[in-house]
Amino acid sequence: MDWLLDADSTPHKLALMVFAVVAFAAVMGLILFAVDRPMRVPNWLVVSAFVGPALLLVAVGLVYPALRTLWLSFHSPDGSAWVGLANYQTVFTTTGLQVVLRNTVLWVVLIPLIATGFGLVYAYLVDRTRFEALAKALIFLPMAISGVAAGLIWRFVYEYRPDQQGVEQIGLLNQLLVWLGIEPYQFLLGQPWNTLFLIVVMVWINAGFAMTVLSASIKAISDDIVEAARLDGVTGFQMFRSVTVPSIRPALVVVLTTVAISTLKAFDVVYVMTGGQFGTGVVASEFYSQSFRQFNQGIGAALAVLLFALVVPIIVYNVRQMRLAEEVR
Image (cartoon, rainbow, N blue to C red; front, top):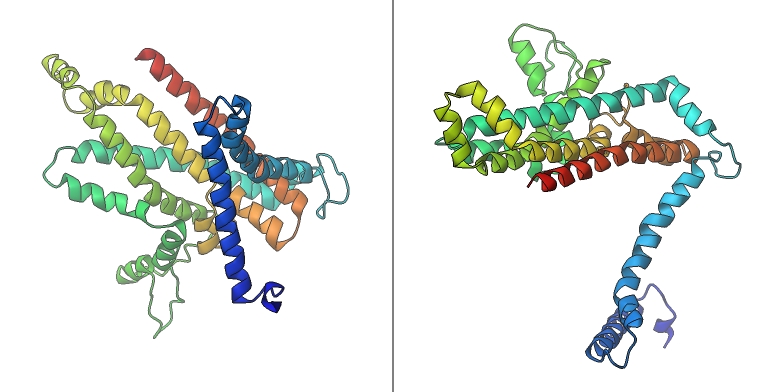
């Protein structure tokens, strides 16, 4: 029976698995038994049995970490001493962290606008064309891969090799520059343009989502509205500006806010392509760097709280716009 005491043995692990399955079956049996006999079991007990585990998981996995992060943001790097707002002051006054905030603002402003604008124009142009399915599939493909894979792909696109005899360029863009007689460029090292090159990657990833949602919204526009506009002599760009865009305004708001939130949380692309170095860091990547590389829990927590504070207004705006759209209907 020594195997029962050996936590690393296979029989011990199998015994634990069997015990877990039996315990789960027993709990579910008790819940179903209580549901089938509502007269014998108080309603509050039935509700607690169903809602209680979910509330417990939310409290343990969401509420406690959030409160813990907020608490750490007011403490020293090791969490031992109260420092008040010193961590937040450091975030807004340190040069390196100011660059991170500047990059984050650029990301949140440019990526949603460019990705949504490109997706809208593309969806409008290819709508009901002969090769619509193929054209949309090509733009949507980046959405099917992870951010890590996208970062690796574009890292090879931007790859740089010194312009020396016998050294071949393996980066697509630099090879094109060489063919044009231009010296290769270090796309990921030159500040501040390297941040814009990372923004291109995020636009490439999110444009497919914007195109898909907006294309469905364009197709949902009533034919009566389109025909009435045509009878009034509205054609071309006027149709796009005066009919299409106002009709899909709720979808535009959803796409803009969704892309903005995903942009704020973007970490994988920056981490894979530059590691947040060379002035390309954003709040999400810097939070990881401060917390798990420099072991400065105070600054890392302050950045996490700041990230949450940036997301909340976007969510509130999205919810309000959706309610206004429902009231109009």
